[in-house]
Image (tube, rainbow, N blue to C red; front, side, top):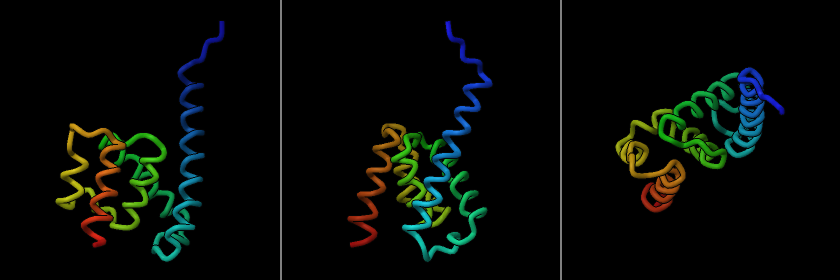
Length: 114
């Protein structure tokens, strides 16, 4: 019988998180090349880590949705979650993390950009 220890799971979790951070670093750098954080890898990586932690607090956990949350954070600023419109969506306990990201998408496309 194969036994996976807690320490091994933690190592695996950290490696997956590191891979995701690396992917997001490349993605955000290529899509937000004029953003002030791009060009400073340490600051951008820190913003990615803080964004992931913030997103998890709102129930946003799958990679696709975390990516969208990070994109919103770079586009609208780290205070995004404290704006009235985003706060209302992110704090809606009836919505899943994916539904929250869909609502943020809809709001930005149909309200903010129109």
